[in-house]
Image (cartoon, rainbow, N blue to C red):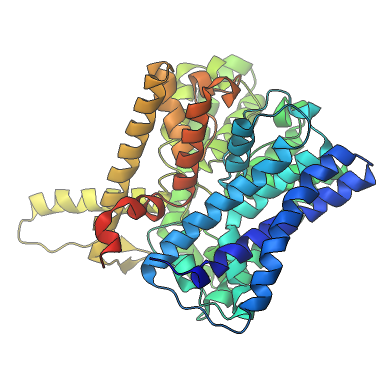
Length: 481
């Protein structure tokens, strides 16, 4: 079993999460809101009392942990971060129960565009800032952020990244994993800053621009307004948001290749081409369906492309009640809930690359029937892919479907209607947040039973970590190695 020294990476991850509380704490002190300030300095102080002595005592002791330990450490880090992030909500004096606080924190770090709070605008600004920060840190991954800093403490970190980075193939853009982490965070910061500036140009004040840019780049899609982005009624803001949701759902390794002027590699990327093709097809279908509904091609394109980008990137942002849309438009959005963003992005879901692999394998099976003696392989990025990738993708899709089924079954057992149970299961497993029925655009998760919200928190966390990282911990053979 894992030794105490091995928990040092988890302690450092918690330390970084706690240090993020300094920003809303300073803001609360500037506003002279002592109750909200206390909600931040109490958990911050408690964590630092543990982190600082641990960092000092073990600073010269290098840590090497096993493959098994890496999975467990990632899971523990995210669980503890979700629990830590719940205390500002619970201690804020706004009547938020501990269950709702845990759910809200889990939504943040899992970048799920959902909430259990009915009146968002009633929350104090420092708490709204913390809500956005949890999404932003959860987007690229607190573990990945810590990996860039762990060499300072003598900790080998590739096992952590293998467990945390989404997608079927963990790809280093540089030979050193810490250098990779820093490069990815550079692009992450750049996209956040760019979106912040666009929101300011679009008319948002600095606070709303920041609190919308942070979660949007993380494909969290939350807002400081009860009405979401529709509060601003701005075609410019909607268009910019749709564009950045798509960019955030793209594999971040492609940004590195663009910066190195490797345009051929970017254009040859199978997943990127499929990702944009899916979006264009979905946006066109929804727009066509919405033209009679809105009576204008422009408005239909505006709302249709936004919601297509929101669901495909698993951002979960809403600017219209799509449950009142024509059936075709709803059907396309429902289909997008089964897709997700790209691997190596901040998005959730099954991921586009897995759909690409499966469809290419389907094509190969047709070819084998036509040419029984032929030898066919899956080609990705115009290169022959590994055969074991197909097996891994098939296994993941099966476990994903099983998780959705179990989540829907538990929801139904606790009193949720069947349709809402299934849609909500898709929404939390894929970290989308929004769905249909009880999880639709006109609802939130506050009405669900407390036990179900705790369960959803676990499922969101498992979905954020690509299921395998969490579910493998419950397999006895994994620990017998």
